[in-house]
Image (cartoon, rainbow, N blue to C red; front, side):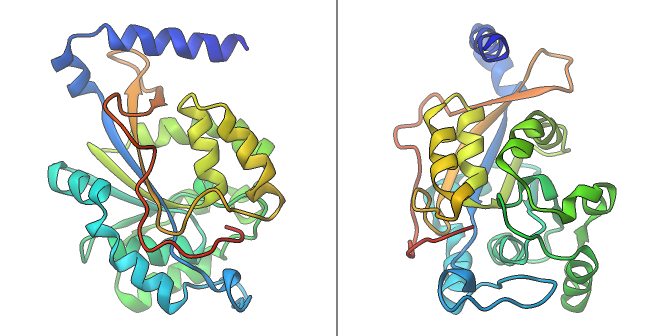
Length: 253
């Protein structure tokens, strides 16, 4: 499409910037799928919350900082931001993986496809009971954040969520999300087959393409040196598309 071709041209233009200038403009985006949830094992759902992490899922999340991609980004960043979807399994994952006391930004646009999100008031209560600083303003701002996210809606809001991530006051953004949304991000990073993967896996109830606590790295780049609009790509030096940690059998989410 025309938009896709324009994106390619913007990326090529950015690659012609001096290396030091690209380094100042780029932001690192680290996205992980949540740990194993009860929806993948005994199908246990808590009303208003949905499925929490299993004991294995909590263990996977607490070990995520030892993942090479995650660990390197955390070590090298100067001003990180920690983001989770408005689903309790992603929130638990980021709380366990982030340094203790880190504020968590909750962003509904990175939630799973075709699944019910957690109720905003219950998420707020969950954070308050544990005295974990959290920002749920995006949940309150988006009335559609309490509805199921379809693949079509995810694609429509893709530019919005990329711009939101890029405009955060951080040099490295860590996100706990879901298998279907990771496929959408791969598409945004110019891996079109990932969209087909998303259609054939998570959007119809199966997420066999992304393991629990699988970590992926992207770059956020402004469309020009003074722009508040951003686009994504894979790191130039990336050899492997992902690093996997304590993978568990996947089903949905």
